Amino acid sequence: MNRALIGVIALGVAACAVPAYAQSETASAMKNRLSIGLGQGTADGYAPTSVGTGTYLAPTTSPETNVNAEYWRSLSPDYALAISGAYGFSSMNWKGATSADPEIDATGTSLKFRLGVDKVGNVGDRLQFFLGPGVEYWSGEQKLDVGGSETESESVTRFGVSGRIGGFMMLSETVGIMGQVGHTFGVAKVDDSGAETSWWPNSFQASWGLAFGF
Image (cartoon, rainbow, N blue to C red; front, side, top):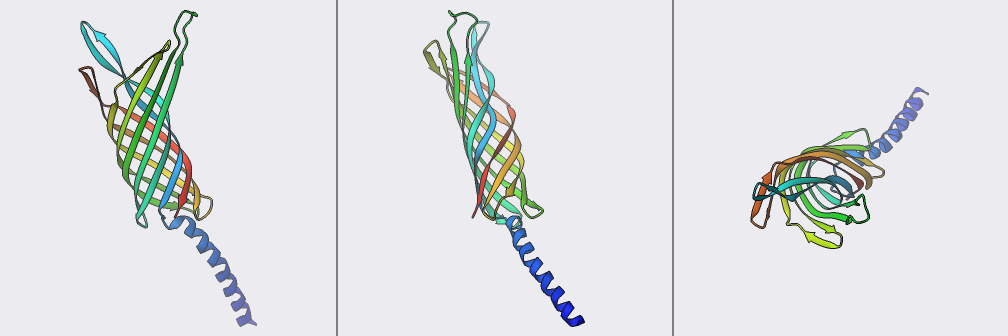
């Protein structure tokens, strides 16, 4: 009787252990992942300004939205190479106090690329976090439409060092939700009609979307 009871208990423990192990594999084994999502960041620009008899380029910033994709290549169970790209866009509209004031539309577009290495860890069965440094390249330009007269700026380029933290909430073994926040600081530069300006910008950014494991 005791042997039968012990056998039943052993079978029950084994039956429970198999699905538990299978579930833990959802997040514990770092897979190669691809995420597609929406994000927010900061666009760097400039505006010509006069100081005395000279003309200079004054740095400006504006919020931008981006569509992004990121690929994680597993290097080991707890490290991954991360490569990402994003297409950013922004839009602002000004209307004057009187009907005689021209309407102004300012739009911007940008491209951003990032290369980094992430440390990967797990919290429970379905949550996986990542954090790590990276290097970033950003380039953007602006268009200004004043009463139908349009002008286009030169491209602003930015090189930066970034750090971020994020995670995957796995919905199944291959599909999950990705979210991350980070910070970037670096150097930006622009050259327009002989005038040149460089500065040290910094900004926060965030992103969320769907992640696919394979």
